[in-house]
Every structure is written in C-alpha cells, then in structure tokens.
Length: 288
Image 1 (cartoon, helix red, strand yellow):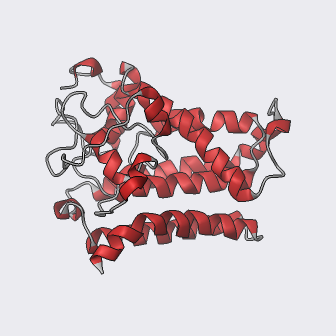
Image 2: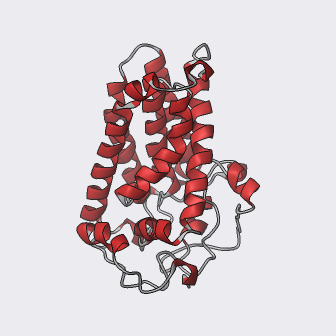
C-alpha cells in the first residue's frame, strides 16, 4: 500500500485536484469551490506525509507549525486579494486581444502556468543573486525541515515580488478571473508537492516537473550548492538557465536544509517579518 502511495501521490494531486478544479469551473461551478478543495488537498498532504514519509523526523513539530500556519494564512489571503483585483486590472490591460478566450479552459490554464512559471523562476533566480532580494527570500530558506506547508512559508513582500513577476504578463494580456483563480489554486497545490515530505517516486517526471525529489536540492544549507532548481512548476526554465540539477546518489535529509551561515536565523513569525530590514551579519554573496 505504501509503495502504491509513493507512486500515485504526485499524479493524484496534480490530476485529481488541479485537473478536478479545472473541470469543476469549466462545467459551471463557481470559483468559490476552490478554497474548500485546497483545504482537502492540504489534509491529504498531511495524511500522505505520515503514511509514507521521506524523512520521518520532518513530520514532527519543531516549534514551527504555528508560525508556518500564520505565514500560510497571511500569504494566501494576500494572494486572494490580488486575484480580486484581476477584473479591474484587466480593464486597464493594454493588450486584451492577446488572450486566447476561444481556447478550452484547461489549455488557457496550462498556458498561464507556463508563462507564470517563467516569471516566478526568474524572480526566484534573482533572489539568490541580488542581496536585497535575498534578505526577503531568506525567510523561506530558514526552514530546518521540509514538509507541505513550507511552500507557503514566505515573507509577504517576497511573495508579492514573485506574484508580480509571474502574473503581470498574464494580466497585461487580459487574463480572465477564473483563469487567475485556477492559476492561484495550481500554485498552492504545486507548493505543497514541491516541499512535500512524502517519499514520492516520480521516475522520468523529474526531468519535467519541479516536484519534491527535485526541489529538495534547492534547500541545501551549505553555501551556493542550493543555487539550483529554481522553477516552480517545471524544470524548463532551469534548463535554459543552466541551473537544473538532480543526483540520484545524493539524499537530502535532516541537517541538510536551512541557511548554513545563519543557524541563528529568527524563528518567530514577527521576527521573520522584521529580519530583512535589519543589517545582515554577512552579505548574501558569502552564504557558506
């Protein structure tokens, strides 16, 4: 049973939840079915992590769960508010005729995912190269364990930067609200999968999709060895950047994630919001 879960988990999350959400909206259900669907996905994520864990110790609360829940609630709420502005922003879009409204909804969402993935990947890449961006992104990298909720554990300003980078081209082209809502839902599901503690077996999909077995290499704590695998949805843009990496001989486990030169990085929610504005003890270029 555990072996079947390892194989089926990622496809079930992608096809079952993302595919199911697109089908529900395409068949006339309101987009407000998405929040309860996301809650169901989070519950399944936690259950799967306990049934087939990659690193059993990562399932235990290390004094970070309440903080991570706060990050998730604030970031999801801010993302929802951003999506609420999509209709008004679309009215101001300079190129509304570019949006392929005649395409099937699933194809519109797929196109939005690919375009958003490019912008988010580039913003993520620059966040490891530009010192002031790293200060905000460091909040996400300060985690000492990887589990589903880590994907939503970000400084709200850094999330705003990534969201702007990913969504701006789509909004300029006149993206409809329902596509934006489905894109946001797909992002949340992908973040769960990307940071999941499920011992998922994805085989050749690791060459295409930026799921947990690929993304764990990005969270390595030592120096710049984690400056790989920046993609959110796919490995496509990493291949173009020359930052795609996977080593089946290397296992990223406990003690391997975090910020190597900042073992003292603040762990409280408010302290993490303030930390990027404090003078850094060492520049991002010296992460080692």
